Image (cartoon, rainbow, N blue to C red; front, side, top):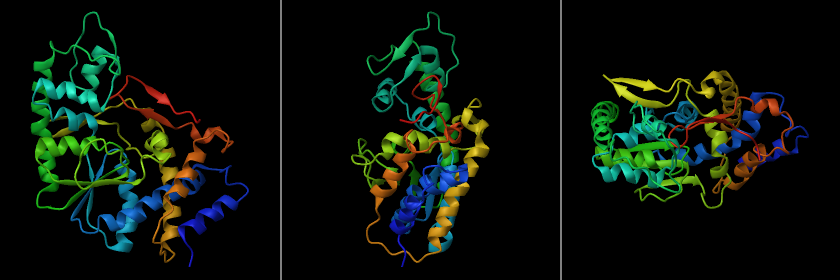
Length: 332
């Protein structure tokens, strides 16, 4: 009987494993074991649930891969859940203290006007705009507090309508994401009095969330350091959800990742091929070698492993919630 380790070892014995010829091969060899091992663990974690939420944007493709496991193992219903750190956090502010506490979880580096726009949803012309880095000092937002709270109330009402329609009638709901802080789960539980169970690829544990864990050990894994590579591929065809107006979700529309979405599809098709190959075997393992697939993915993120740098031309990381730019991902 073949095991996950057997399949992965065969890949490593291939002389050309470090030189994939296509995006599909890149997905099969380096992403495939990482993703498969996570879902092989996840299927047993969520089998008592009645609804599985796959958070945007990573959830767009994760949900597709879940369907392969769902069919084989008769797993619960899932939905692609429209959310973001911005929507979840912005909907939660009911006091000035809430606003400042948001920086405890997520820093910001950029100008004051960009902070107001990208984190708090305010398009405001700021005279004498200043550069911020909240690692070192929090900004004075006293002039904007009332506007932020007003915006928060609006988003909270709109978002609450969507959330309750999505999970109405379900009592055992799991939230799925790459990780790693669980901040979206935290804000939604706090704001809307939800009971959610988090199952992440890796979980830092710095937020005290009940019934929440990750597969890849945060303290030991490389994945937490390489997560931007994963998020670059596991993205939606539309930008981050940043607002809700009259029931309509608004997205950022200037993401490099969306311009290269066809490349993401090719990589994910390679991952699906690996998953389907693995599911064709009767796999029985009491311990999944998480370190093995984690190490393999880490190899991909090193310049010395894969010679064809063109395969990484579509890898960008956009995160306006913590900084004011999109960066091209470079390997270590």
